[in-house]
Length: 320
Image 1 (cartoon, helix red, strand yellow):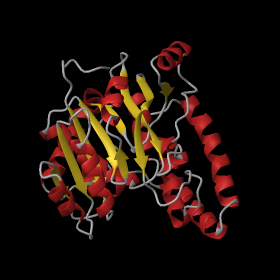
Image 2: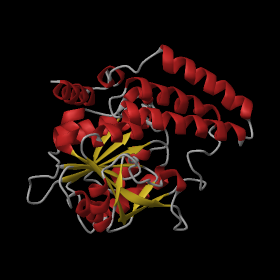
Image 3: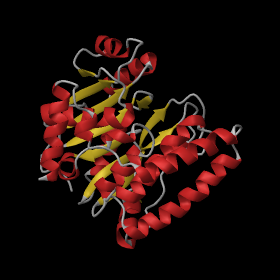
Image 4: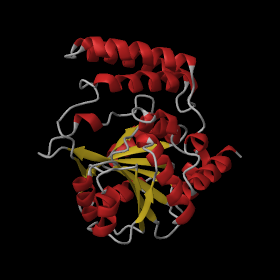
């Protein structure tokens, strides 16, 4: 699915929480893109370090959304996507965290990849760490369920056919957003980008564009298997929610991904320095994943002023 616009409008959405200096660096990098952005939306997730004000001081043209409560990455991106689509008329929305620093040609290369073939709804960048190594937290894998023709075509285009993508630099087709709606805000953190991207890509195409490079400035170089502590609860609960309730994956895909997830959970616990913490949180997450379900995103993000209206309107349109 490519835009019909001669010159596609691209709006960046950056979700920020208490990483003021990195957010300033991200704003500077966005302003320096060789392919200029048409707008930038910054969602300040109730930061206490002046992140939002610093971003505005760095780049006065940003559309700053201040949330009164921390809605996590899932809620922040849902709010930002709703704001971007409601007020800035984009053809594509470019998502990233506040610790994502795009290189100058990142958007130009990503947009070129996204518009290189029909039915592409999601494009992701190559993510590296401070030292230039590929970041294991955001390493793509070729779509095991994609057709051989599309896989070959993606390689010819210099990319990789993928089934999912990361919020650390994800370019999304706005027509597809209007079809499927927003990220599930109740996920809060963990698996929110996986669930949303597979929902966006199902029946369409996703591509990894290695020519588009961003730096993910995490404190340490680690994968999603890194010792998560109490946050392991969200990994388990959200993955159970996803496999039970999301329509982003087919039944066969859910079976394959579930088997892989169980193996990864065992590995994470076995290598943890505090396995008792992970065992406890795995039990809680498993219980809540089966006994509960995520609330509608419009409900989770209610009471936040005009942004709540934007969220509710987009979700209603997607359900229509």
